[in-house]
Image (tube, rainbow, N blue to C red):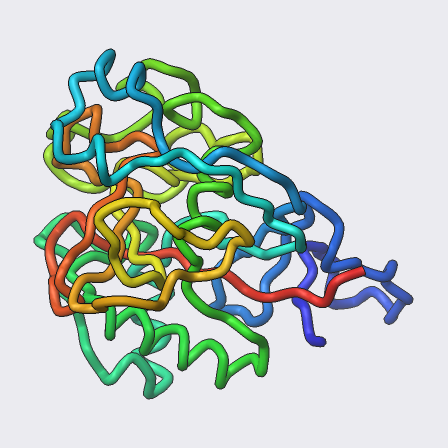
Length: 274
């Protein structure tokens, strides 16, 4: 396993033995290549997936989501997992293209700038093309998160409606046309797992096929791949969406070919288990 540790040393220093890095230490951060996203190790745990009627009524959530976010059900993530600290950025996407990957596709940044802004105007197949590139480059098992993994990571060990509590806060998330564009990743505080922009700024593709409710949903963190995959799930909301739609529990299915200015993705990586 080749991991680039976050430790700096002067070029003139003689080689010295580095401490062993454990990829299964919760909270540890690493990258697998210079152009690769920074990954954070997420610990195993349990949570209740979905939203309560109280949450939806209090925040004025559209009635269609009553069914979509229920029934609430316990999920066990029984393994360590690495999750991107940020959504994939334009810098990282453009590195993929420059290296011959991502099908050579150059998505528009809408004139807002590239760099550390999250990549937008990417569809489900585009996201998978990035995953294929980084898997080939590193030899590691990168992938999209399952929907259950995403919600577990987004909650960060809390049961609140947003990563930062039960009320939306413009100082903690980019939503509702407050800024009329995306912001560079890391512009707002992280959740308790050290992950940024799990909600708002850009929505994120996940692996699962969409289902209209959680009846018979997996409870072990795996992606729900049965049924009709004409829609793929999207989580997290975006910069242009109302506050109630950037909750941790909010979910919707989009056509896999959808590209728009508030939709990007985040990646995960499987880890050896202790």
